[in-house]
Image 1: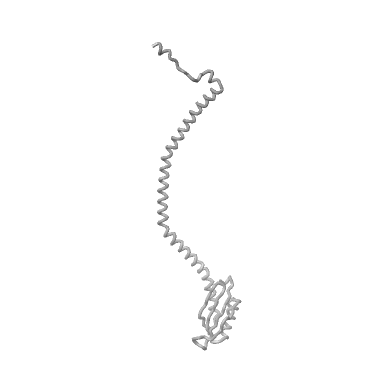
Image 2: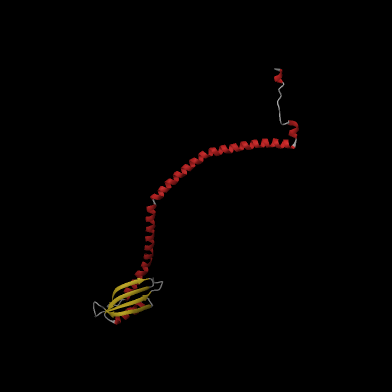
Length: 186
């Protein structure tokens, strides 16, 4: 048993002389510092592992929301298409009705200037011009109508483009008047 007591512990790093040297201090600092670095790294890895479960749950929730919203968009696609078509029709209606007031005003001016013996067969209104086709028993009524349009209705550019004998009744004259409308009148 005496031989067992003599066993001594072997220390490869001499504590007093080596710890006092520069290399010994660097090694002692590195060993203590790296221990803390390893502990912090392990904590970060554990937090990342635990947060993975939370992120997976969020990812599943977001996928479910996306699927629901896609089905909602697919379901409302026909409504959106119909809504867009109605909007286009409303825009066309708005442009037509905005000119309606000026159109009715133009027609009322023309109606107030027609002589008694003139019969209108057509009115063609296009942007910037108006073509009036009618029948009259004599040239005097046609010229009176043109003068009335210039003076009373306020259309300074009235041109008689055609006068001929009507095909249905040879006692009547068929005429065409072209009236230039100004932008304020349209």
